[in-house]
Length: 213
Image 1 (tube, rainbow, N blue to C red):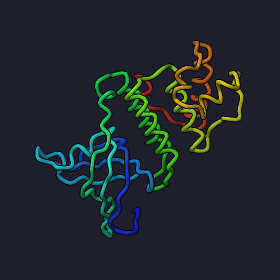
Image 2: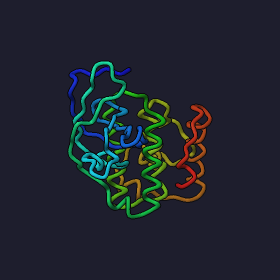
Image 3: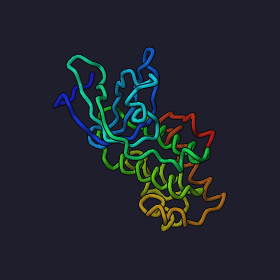
């Protein structure tokens, strides 16, 4: 059981996933900026008149009010404000698949209640870029490499046969720089092989969304 102090707290968060709870509720996984990954109870939200339904939808960014009752397994969402819904992502299947992949990566590589504002900022910036500008072949690879660094399993200092400038851009350059990076099938395969060794080989992780991106 995770305990929070004070019992009422607020934070900005990104919805990573949701699942049903009983007849009308949902357990929503939030990635909050200050508290990390949380499982939050949204009571009665699946009803037609559920007031917090929009705040419980995946790929929503909001400002959430939460309450942790002593002895409860999950904080309860008591209110909040939706800040971003990413209409550009929701309107295009390929963008939606990639955004879902980003969220699955964060889910798998993040323990509960371990705050990492840099990880939150990375996910938010990637979703904002995907929403407004779409993606290039390097977008997914750059996000994955940066996330690996933030969770301590990356290889920013390890050469995989790529040009140093390209490797640095993928790890720390602007999204404009990532979009402008030269790409060919051989370069992409080298990075994919490196990521596969990291996630599947070293960590034993596979991702359901990988088949769609």
